Length: 180
Image 1 (cartoon, helix red, strand yellow):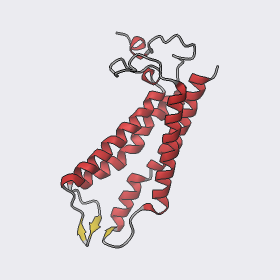
Image 2 (spheres, rainbow, N blue to C red):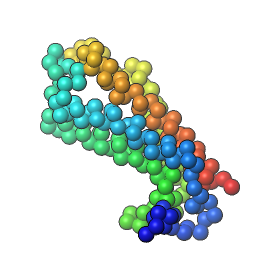
Image 3 (tube, one colour):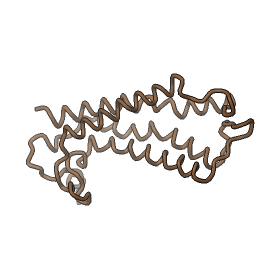
Image 4 (spheres, rainbow, N blue to C red):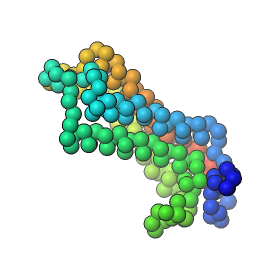
């Protein structure tokens, strides 16, 4: 099977489907999962017991049981959501994959994709903007060493780009799929 055959969307009968995404949009779509990766790896290190400079009651943080499952699940879900952005530049962002029940093989309605991606981008800006401006735990029984705080910021700061990158990507998707 040739590369063109593997990438070309199924014929949907819509003139706006199958247009190639701009090169910058393809790069942006592939950048988004990389932007989210450091924070996920930070959480994996936390669960694995790697000394990352996080302390609770003066002792290094130890995570286990359901808390570890939650933290690892959060990382997996975050990365899966970031990978969905690639659908805004790939054929499966235009035609639902055939293996999906009920909608498989049907055209993805552009207003649905644009609305979902826009809502996600705005939510990400609000969530990570809040976290960056004061949503982090301070003092009390939980804290970070200076090196641990630097590592935390280095791993989580890229998340501030996720929302704006997703909104830019959504605008390109809208132009490509909804305008002549």
